[in-house]
Image 1: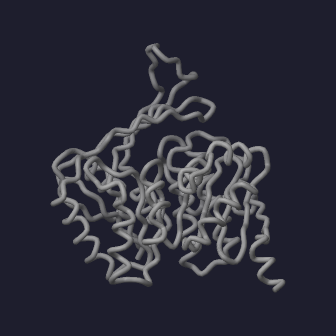
Image 2: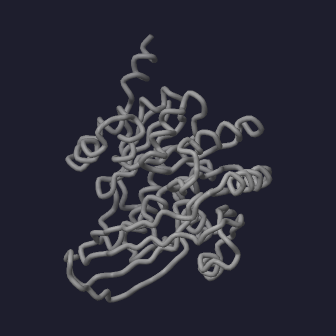
Image 3: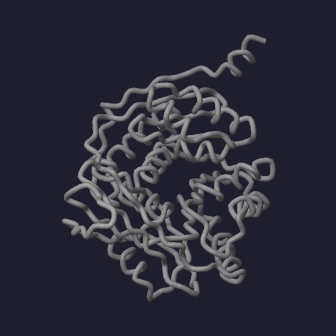
Length: 331
């Protein structure tokens, strides 16, 4: 089973605009949708659509509207009570696919709620092959909570595969704690790769869009030397890169009319895990990740793709040999 932990879930509201966003003006969306979201929940949703056994763990009260949305989507879940409602994230989507996100802070996590969540996590790990810890940290959580969680898990399940997908201070803290506990897999975008390694993430993304992925591979390779086994970097329209101790691969996406980028990165992670758990090669895992991310970008709102919506045949993948590995092989 693939278990996802989303400490700060959200109700994702998407408003589709008929014209470009105009600040300070009254605008009327052509459509409005609400779905249960949060990075880990989105991953579990995509896995469920692919008929892969998964479970979403998160803090939320039984009578929260978020739970009703989960049941409507038939996403398998396990919740822990929390004193506060699940946050609302609002996305404004323009006709050209540009998205503006306004994310709520979320319910405050008390030490008691945190301990209950960790205890429930411990119970579920007995049935878990992969654990995905994803999303932002809720108010009240320690800034290094993800590192603390990995340290706790490694004491009892050192062989468990752990994937991390987060951003901002949370991912920076993961980077600072790699010597204490490193995930099996991490999935940053270009900006988050910079936050993780202390580099200019915007420069990394600009280089990738211009066709130069060497900064991506260099930064990801640094993470490999610090204990992470697999680094999957999603780069939007430029594609995605995968770096492991054995090499690096880069894949370009198929032609896609972008309707919304919300959930594209989460879908990429789900696609990668689907291929990874099937025993696919690194290149094929990357192709599946790009196929899922591109399919999600071509859907409106926070819709997540099913396997039949993928365009795998239209994806090109290239393999790169890391200079460090080449020099080791020559010795």
